[in-house]
Image (cartoon, rainbow, N blue to C red; front, top):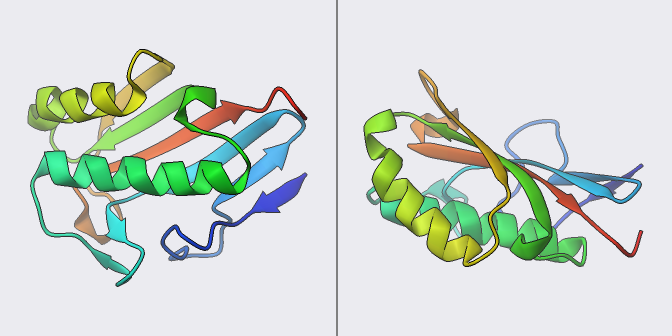
Length: 127
């Protein structure tokens, strides 16, 4: 196993890695809508926060030599399931025609009170 760190993703806010490579799989820690330049949660609606999360996941995957097309499973943690349709539109655009398996869960609270957090598992066929 090896730790994956992206210099262009937000710094971890706890004792964890951006991702862990284990064989051909990359297990990405949950990303929240933190701006990597400021280290602060972005202002904005669920659409803006979802896009920031996808950008952060993209940065983590890039550090492992992968893209969102390599993702096989995501878990979405929403603060309010009422945001599902709006989140889903941005998510669908981010993944384009690729449709990984997904679970979506409403949670009482995400880190920093973010409206959304997404974690993923990706497959590296070169590993």
